[in-house]
Length: 336
Image 1 (tube, rainbow, N blue to C red):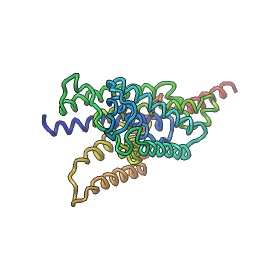
Image 2: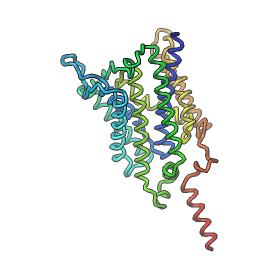
Image 3: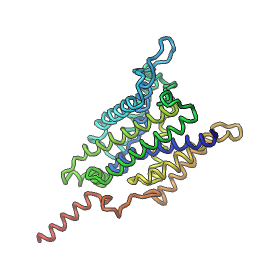
Image 4: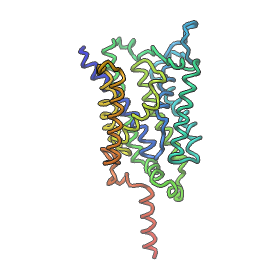
């Protein structure tokens, strides 16, 4: 198989995975207005739990340590990653969402992510510390007799199907009464609560669903590349996911797709294989971050709604509070 075809298929897999990340963060921030600066942490939780469940039991004396070691199949290991990411998201939500909003909420989520990062990195017995998990079995390779190249093409199908299902669910959620209530809380939490909406419950729901998306993306990531270490889910990776959503357009899942292609694929993944310039291996990554930062600044300055803004003209996109207030005013006028 042509190396170029394998390379392009790899980029497609990353594109699908980053779409999942974008949908998850969009549910949290674009739907409910939650400033989650630890989003990449939940990706790591899902990835680690998937890897630890898929790996066989650790070999005594190998100096490689991790919990579980269950040799589970792909669906079971994926389910564990989903449940783990959702549970950790619920725990962080209980701490952060009850009384905190805006920048205070962002600080708490960032602190939570930093805490989990330090615990996993320093507590070697969990997931082999700073070295991370490696050698995670690629799913279905034995059953389908796949080699390295055909596995990449097969995983394009797997990740694409999962991404399509999550895309469908995210769009249905946006148009549902639950999604409209989430956007009401995003627009004005005090007015939403005044009209009987449980803002904490709505934001907690968005938080957990977004974390589940992150966990699925993390499980797909480690299943594809067979390894995950703390260096792969640092704060900088959270910046990439936030950048793709803000540049593409929050509140619009199509915007997350556009942002994933521009930021995650075109600028982040497609440039990883460029040769070093002038013997400086860090020049390309630094230039990549500079370009993404400049693009984000320009977008926020001249088009803060993103390249594909939320469709305000759509009935389902009108904030619930606005429609409730208009109905109340109409009833007052009729009653008068």
